[in-house]
Amino acid sequence: MRKKVSIGSFTFNVVNMGLLLIMSLLCLLPFLFVLAASFSSPEELTKYSFILWPKGFTLNSYKYVLFSTNTVAKSLIVSVVMTIAGTVINLAFTSLMAYPLSHSNIFGYKFFMRLVTITLVFGGGMIPTYLIISAYGMLNSYSSILIPGAVSAFTLMVFISFFRSIPSELEEAAKIDGCNDFMIFLKIVLPLSTPLLATFVLLFAVGHWNEWFNYILYINDGSKWPVQVVLRNILASSNSSIGDSLMMGEDYTPPQDVVRYCVIVIATVPILIVYPFLQKYFTKGIMLGSVKG
Image 1: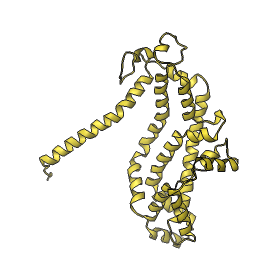
Image 2: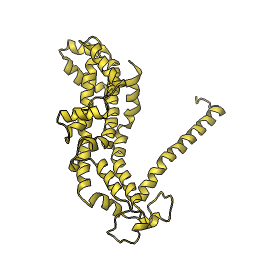
Image 3: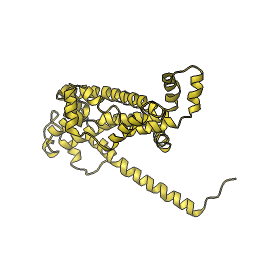
Image 4: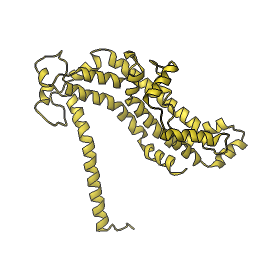
């Protein structure tokens, strides 16, 4: 028998869905505008203050950003490789450190947990970090990007909390079958941690893809810069307004506004492509890793 819904509940659901729909549109419309404007000609953009469909469709701005030099193509490869490498390193180091610390009976447990907890409150700062990286000879190399941020104290705490929620009986049964700790970690703990791992794959990947400040700080070789830094430089060098570029023909340098729209699309679309594949694990992984402790 179908449960009767009261008028109050029905009204609440309608209002709630309406508000959520409005909020979703407010988040979506700016990106749709940016996407449409990036494919529009500067002449048409001067006529419209807001569009949701390209006006005077053209790829000239994307040709300028992507093919005016081969720098952007190389930087895209750097970004993809560094995002994959950084995500793998983050997951490997964090999970390998979190699993033993999820057992309070290991030797030195209190000492290591105190070290981790201290880093949640205190940090060395930019200058000491730079001096340490310089002293170890990591300047102008990708190790300066990957190694210092390999393990985050907050992420480590979430992993420890999640691993503690896994029933200890599973580990005891595996030990009876002859598995050592490393085999238990690979064959039992990691497969059961799929929601958590998928969630942090997304978080780590977004962080590495959007990283640009540390590259400027530690790497002087422009050929090693990722797409975020290169696109930032392109945007900074494109200072003309839309009105200044209307009469320049096919070889014009796109105005700053149009270049900005192209940069936003290029920097955002790769993560938007990855997100739907991991979204179903996102909320579940965060909750499972943060409730129990």
